[in-house]
View (cartoon, rainbow, N blue to C red):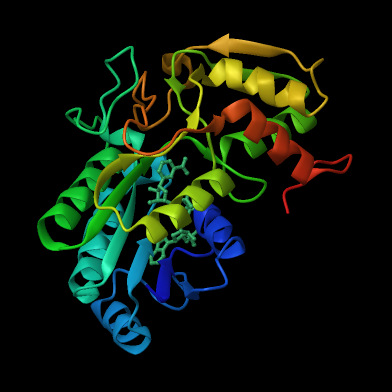
Length: 281
Ligand SMILES: NC(=O)c1ccc[n+]([C@@H]2O[C@H](COP(=O)([O-])OP(=O)(O)OC[C@H]3O[C@@H](n4cnc5c(N)ncnc54)[C@H](OP(=O)(O)O)[C@@H]3O)[C@@H](O)[C@H]2O)c1
């Protein structure tokens, strides 16, 4: 294992992977400006030129509501894009990043790796179709499902909550969605360990701890010293977003070592944001 290619390298997870890239690897990070995964030509040219030993495929259309309202783009990027990467990969190892949204959320205990997926929206359906493509056509692969990712950068729940707390002074947050918040830098470190471990199969990688969006939002404002900001619990029906979300999508890591509790990771995230304005870096 020497040369590692990362797609979606400027995204939330991609940036964490790039920051932590181990010095023993020759790592190339590309995003849509350099390699649009929907372009067979772009993908082939990149893979043939760099000849990676492993690819960590993070590029995706991750806007859940955007996927619902523009399913053609979601399929093109998440399914065709993944197929293009799989086909260009040849014998290279493929680490494919997937999501808790492949599950329908009717359970009340964390989903294990072998539980049956049944997505309820376009984002989850396209990510599941991408998983199927990887399983069928990538001889050496690891599929890593994660959930509710946050970081001091990028588009994520923690930064949205902090921005809304600052700008509006009060919050309304859904209490009927429960999941596994996961710190992108913790996930990135675990993914680099997985590259070194050379293990194949389907894995769940999330921080420990299960929480509703409402309770998590309260923890976020308290961690950031804004505990006096009122947080009102609401239902998903009241929020009326274009895409339905699974009501319960916590994941169980039953195959890989557990990651630390999300609360410890949240404290690190807030500390890293720093400064009185808590601006994203
Ligand atoms: N965020 C979460 O809560 C979450 C939860 C579970 C799983 N995941 C999975 O984790 C992986 C990484 O997601 P993330 O959180 O880092 O999301 P992200 O910040 O949206 O990163 C995805 C990256 O892919 C890029 N991209 C979009 N279309 C592309 C294309 N056609 N060709 C090449 N690159 C393209 C995006 O660019 P633009 O920003 O310009 O579109 C972005 O830089 C994804 O597979 C996602 O499904 C995320």
